[in-house]
Every structure is written in C-alpha cells, then in structure tokens.
Image (cartoon, rainbow, N blue to C red; front, side, top):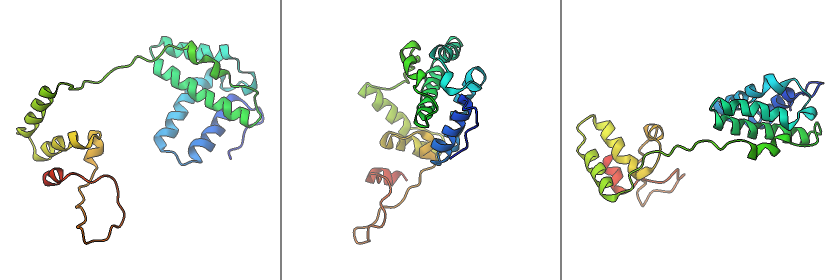
Length: 188
C-alpha cells in the first residue's frame, strides 16, 4: 500500500487510492492515466486540503467550473472519481463521509449523442449489396463483409485472427471466443 503523507490531504489520499485500486490491481496504463487526469482537475482547488475538511460546496464549485466550460461528461466522471477517493478515505478512517455523493443531482447530465444506424431492412440490404460490389482493396472489402456478422469495432477486427475450426476428430484444446460461421470462414 502506498504511503499517505502526514497531512492526509485529498491529494495524498487520491494518490494512495490510485496506487491501491489502479496500479495495485494492474489496470491498463490508459485507465491509470485517466484517473490521474480526473485528479488533475481537483488538485489545485482542493488537493492540498485535509480530506476530512473538504466541503460539498468546495467540490461543487470545481465541478460547476468544468460544467460551464461545456465539459459535462468530465464533471460527472470527476465527481464519481472524487466520490471513490472519499470512500477510500472513509475506509482508512481519514474522513467521516463522502461529500461527493451528495452532489450527483447538482450536475447537469451529459449531452447524449446518438450514432447513425440503419434500421430499415431495405436500406440495410442496399448497404450489404454495396459492400459486396465494393471495388477497392480486397482486405477492406473482406473487413466490411465481416463487420455485420461479428459486431466488433473496426480496430478490434483489424487485430483479429482467422483460426481454422478443429475437425471433429481432433481434441478440443482451448476454445477462445466464438467461431465464425461457415460463410464467414469462406470470406477469410
């Protein structure tokens, strides 16, 4: 466990929380960096204050500043991160309560942006026909033909490997993932 500084500041408790819950649990580097990014929004305004003395109004002022800057999602996620830090502080007997928990309804909801989708079966058929008639590179065409069958992101498909199915007589070693249909194996 990481060492807390003698002052038990919000910053030191947050660093301990990141060390224990993120680094200690071997989370992805991007996840650890994201946690530190959330902390960076809180460091200057409340980072040096003892965690037990941080008031909901102080935290709300920081979050409202993010919200006014048009960063609603960041404000909501920063509040959630702060809440986890305060709960860590409560568990370590460094503070009595989680002031961030009281602020959930005080923030505006993030603006949801829906992504385009083809819901009409006729138009979906037109798209699939257009993919079959695609005249560009063969690898791109194969990828576009696979995407409607596997429902993964393009980057995930790009890193995927086509593995031949085992024949009925071979032993079942380790099954990994869901096998492609026979039609998709022909494309591969």
